[in-house]
Image (tube, rainbow, N blue to C red):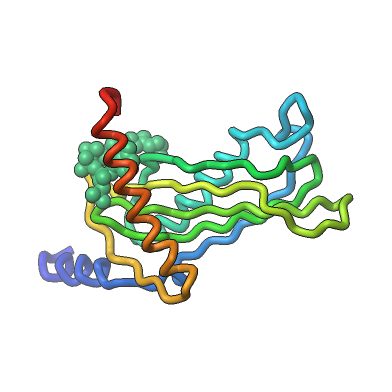
Amino acid sequence: MQKTDEKMHDAADMQPKPVKDSVVVTRDIVHPSDVNAHGIVFGGYMMSLLDKAACIAAFTHAGKKVTTVAMDGIRFFKPAKVGTILTIRASVNRVFNSSMEIGLKVMGLDQLSSEGEQLICRAYMTFVAVDAEGHALAVAPVVPETPDEIRRYNEALVRREARIALSKSLTAR
Ligand SMILES: CC(C)(COP(=O)(O)OP(=O)(O)OC[C@H]1O[C@@H](n2cnc3c(N)ncnc32)[C@H](O)[C@@H]1OP(=O)(O)O)[C@@H](O)C(=O)NCCC(=O)NCCS
């Protein structure tokens, strides 16, 4: 690629993009091989589903290779049994510089219950855009439009500040 083409490509990459353009919704069904000894979904399996959905959202927004740097705020609200249909939603809450916070929500529909979809899990993941050598790269800003997106955008900054403060107050990072 010519230098001018590269610059134009970089400039296009850095244009602000709405949250809705990179929202990811994936579905999965809990199989017997996905549960722990108590017959409910294994946390590590859920984290794998979350990591994949978040990675797709982060890559779709950034348009660059991304890598997972952190997962936090993960909370399991209800157990999911074999046969539960999981709906995983991932969206970019906020872009900082090279990093992005992705918000994740998992709903579960137990086929044998009449109670409808239940909240199973929520989590936040941080992804960083990287070049071929693994060096961090700047990411285009994300534009929140709906009241929920604006709330998540504002709360993402509170979480980032808490992460940085915690990291500074601990010896091991
Ligand atoms: C991600 C990685 C490239 C960052 O490299 P680095 O030298 O630490 O880069 P920086 O210190 O410049 O930090 C880059 C960004 O990560 C963020 N970051 C670093 N540690 C973080 C943490 N614990 N939580 C959240 N964000 C963090 C920084 O705040 C910075 O964000 P910003 O640019 O938006 O301000 C590097 O740590 C890495 O390669 N990690 C391994 C990734 C991996 O293997 N993931 C698992 C498989 S996908």
